[in-house]
Amino acid sequence: MAGLVDSSGTSLIHSNGCPPDAPTGRKKGSISCCGLGNLYMWIDPDTGIAGLWATRLLPFFDGPCVAAAEAFEAATYRAIRRR
Image (cartoon, rainbow, N blue to C red; front, side, top):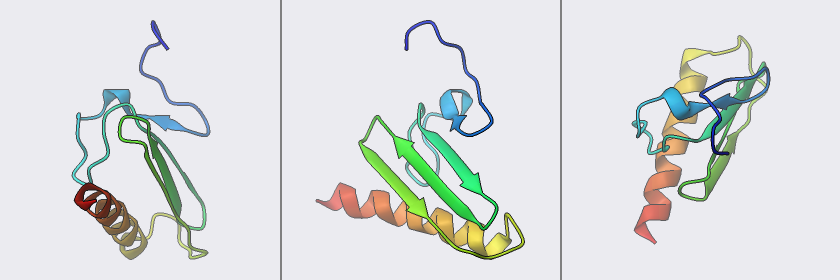
């Protein structure tokens, strides 16, 4: 919405303050959130791409889980761009 400033709330992170393009392909203006069991989701309104990586693994923010979620996101953008 016009006039809103960059912000993050308790449930969603709005990436207006992030670099224009994440290494995975996610665009500025996307929103994302995560959950305790290494669940990661994003919505990219610029491209119309959204995704969910869901596991039930602890500890939260486990290195291999984060790497797999980022690889999934990057693969999603690559696959859709090829279409």
